[in-house]
Length: 609
Image 1 (cartoon, one colour):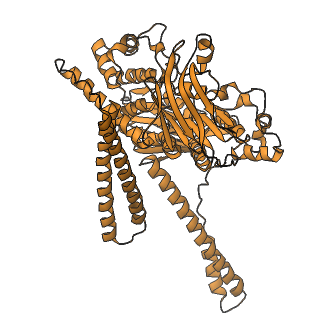
Image 2 (cartoon, one colour):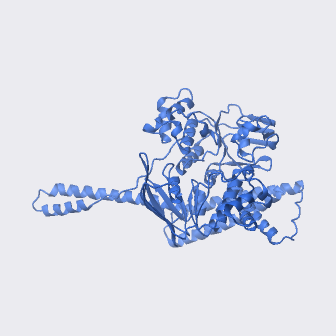
Image 3 (cartoon, rainbow, N blue to C red):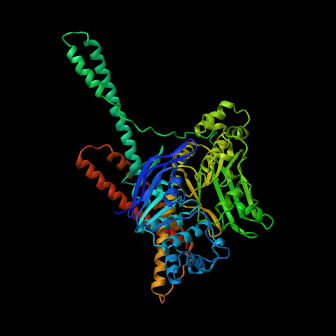
């Protein structure tokens, strides 16, 4: 485990904010390290210092002679008119066959190698940059927020790449699920200090909570002992017979020291304004077609993701949907398929190309868009903006309470918007949304630029909210917690997904595996025959398969409940035999659930044709 990059006694200050205060860490060429910390804690500054792009006020960055450092660039490194293959060859100076071999690992099809890179969506461009990164044969990668704006499929490819990568990694991410799947060490930056833990992020946070609780208990016992000693000394120091005992107790009292408990940082806590629960249909679409007409294509697509700019023709059509009141609907699909276009259409930011869209009676819709925080009034203060957003009748104290819950406290409420970071602007927009009374929320990537704690607080608030929510997110943990229903945007259609978000993730994972296997087969055996075409199902056969799917879903749900009950029992038992029996039962349930899920996927794939 040779150390290839070290930070030694580093100090870095911006104005009054001290980001690094005597911080040190060491990175080996076989460790995969997840870097976590609050917004503004100094994660990006640390990465730039390690890369040599930013100088320290004091301290050293020590690089081993064996270090081959690679980093995922956030900026656009492409030239005008440059093809994928041309960029890979120019950037790496590797031959064409080698570039094609690495491109295959990221499922970049041969037909795409001759396309202009800048014509691709953001997700595909990230795949190209990852391929270029690997061509340099690095032994340590530094990745700053690599999952931002990546769809689920590309995230899975990136995870697979990082798990199989032989070198070390330092990964900055607000997505705990991603860190959990890719990193075996955790580095936290907090109050200018760096703490390395030999375990993944979930184990680190559990260990941190346990240590804090242990230290609090030790301090409570120390305070109790201190009180007893002080009482004994007070009663006995004037008595000649017990004065020597009192002096002895006084020495004990001096030796008692409180443990310095690492205080938890300020956390965001908020709730959306209470709304009356409603029943019935909140949103209905009939033969809806979405996309960009010729006259609005150039202006309206500026904020759409690349690949959704299908000017003059529909992105999706024949959309028949019903969303019930109280449902929290996760909108899923690959980048460029039309998720943002669909959300912009239902919130009247885009005009439907065809068909009808109807909101239920009394629906009051609030919108959080991906890029809204880039168009905030720069000269306004935080407080001015919140007052402007607040519903009529909102008091000054209510505005200050909401601002404080989003960590805009004291003098921070007077900060001008132009000096706020991306994360602070995103929090400000959310705070403004809370001051308005909506019973329907449309949220397009609400977790981007928010730190882990704020995303958790948002998930908690949405789970308590009794209105209707339609949202997109690339954060799997957030999707898993919030979504009670799923709508998939894929191949020109928008439809309700017949199962849960977990099933959707499982299906995408299997499709990805099958695609990799198929690519490998085609490359390895060019003469292999193509797969037989799919057969059209009869009506009776289709109904039987749908019935079987529902039956499997009920069995999976029942077993999942049994699994949760067994897990809860396992936490309470004290004897080893009981624990072993419950663990065996838990393993058996997990295996049975996996088998049923595989059967469900087979049925689903037949129905999908």
